[in-house]
Image (tube, rainbow, N blue to C red; front, top):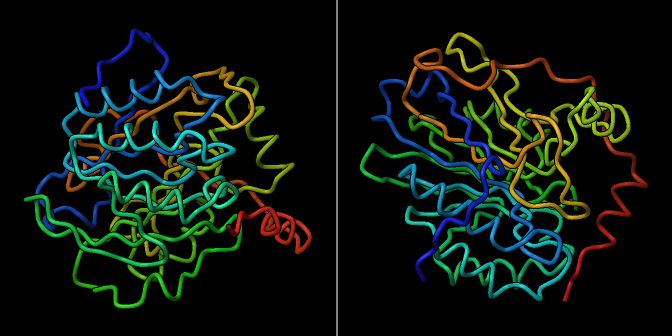
Length: 293
């Protein structure tokens, strides 16, 4: 299926970042396109997802990674989802999100794999697109209680550059000690409305997220931690309204193997918010909503 880019001026922002300093010299420059929260379904017009595919292909990435919430509230649009994933010209690697589990994770994963995507469910893999081997570790969704970090990092080689994928950004803190210097994530949609820092109020103070949108941490080789990037996403699960630069739909292009500072980036690393862990009541409520069919 050939995907033509619809006329959507200003609807999807393209942001560029370098990878961590520790990748330099270990990879030939590798372009990784990060998308998240496609939310294929009734809330987000299908033409927007097709536009995201077309814009991604135009940038000619070596690899596409998608960090969860492929669907919205049901499995009714899996045919559209399959068409979207098949439209990417580069290999696709992804992890599942809470909406995928709430709608039916097994069926979503089956369709994604049928479309050619590699879906990591608490496991790792090594890909080589001609720029040197890149190790990718993917956590299943932490929001619904499916993340298993110990299982995911088992067998990771400390000698290969490693990229982490997790729908929930806070899981990055537990991946850094396993030589994972960069984690890509989603879930928050950047708050969608970022005027007057409303996104930080809604997702930081009210829901307890440390990471709302963009780049946090450090990409310096001298820093023992790492960095996490929270994408603003393509779709929406409730209202498709987006206001403010940071809340716009986005595709983030990461130039792995490039030194931070080698080119202009959208923004620098930020300091995490205070955050707080979800209560046992909240965790139980999220898990109870999972479709186990």
